Image (tube, rainbow, N blue to C red; front, side, top):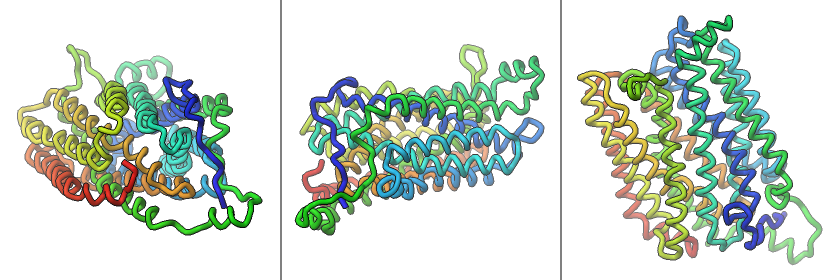
Length: 459
C-alpha cells in the first residue's frame, strides 16, 4: 500500500503566496464553520427557553450535558471519518459527502419536534466527522515536507474558519433571538416563537454554499485528497511501502499524544462560550450598545473577530522568525497561559454580578485573551500533527487529534452543568478552570525538553 504524492510544487503561490488550492478549502471551511457556529450559538439557549417561547424547557444541567455530548460527538466522529477517507473514500469525496450530511442535519432542525432535534444533531456530528479532519489533511497536502509556508498556510486557513464563525452568531442569532425579526414574522403571519428554527435553517444554507464552492473549484485540488490505493510496484518498493513504523515514527506519535492531553484541557475551557458563558451573557451581562439592545448570542462573534484580527499577525510572526520562532511545545504552553489568564478575569466579573448586570467588556476581554492562546495552540497543533504523522497515517492521526477536541467538549459540557446565576458559585467555577489551566501550563513547560526530543527534527 502506498500513498500518492500529495504535494504541490513550492513555486505554486497563487493564493496570497500559497498554493491556489488553499482558496477553495478556505471558503469551503468558512461556510461549514458558519453552519456549525450558527447552530451552536443558539443551541443551549433554545434548549433552556420555556415552551411558551418556542424552546424545549430543559434545565441547565440537562441542556449542558446534551451540549457536551453533541459537541463531543462532532469531533469524536473525526477518527472514523479519517479512516474512511484514507482507505475508502479519499479526502475529497469524504469532504463532499460530509457537507451533504451536515446540511441535512441543519435542515432537520427546522422542524419543531424532539425527534427532528436529535436527528439533526446526529447527522451534523456524522457529517462533520467526514469533513473536518479531511479538509485539514488536504491543507497539509498542499505543502512539501520542508515548505516553510506550512504554519502560515494553516493560520490563513484558520482565519477562514473564523470569518464564518463571526458571521454565524450575527445571522443565526438575529433570526433566533431578535425582537425585530420576531416582529417581521408576526407581520407575515408566522409564529414568532418558532424563530429558533429560522436560525437553524440559515445554518443549513451556509453549508450548501460551502459545497457549491468546493465543487466549482474542485479542479484546483486534483493533486490532493485521494485515498490510499494499491499499485503495481516492484518487490523492493512494495517492501518499503509496507514496512512497520520506525522508532522515530513512534516517538513522534508519542509527542502528538502529549499535545493531545493538554489540548483536551484547552478546549474544555474554550467551549464554555457555547454553554455556561452563553447563559452568563444572556442572564448577567448588559446586552446593549449605546442604548441599543442586541441578542446575547452576538457576543459569540467576538472570539472569531479577534482571530481574524490576530491571525495575520501571528502568521507573519511565525514566518518572520523562521528558525528563531518558539518550538511547538513552547507555543502550546503559551496557549494554556493565555486562556488561563482569560478565566482569571471571570473571578471579579462573577463577583460584580451581585450588583446587577455587568459590562459586556468583561467577556470581550476574556475572548481576546482566549484568542491569543488559541493562535498559539490550535493552528499550530493542526500543522504539527501533519508534520509529525507518518505519511500513511495522516488522516487517522488528524482524527485522533480532533478526538482531543471531542473529549474537551464533553468536559466543557460537564463543567457548564455547574452554572448557576450566583456570584460566589460562578467565581469558584471560573476560578477553578483558570487554576487548572495555569497548572497545566507549568507541567507542559517542565515536559518541553522531553517533548522536543520525541519530535526529533520537527520543530
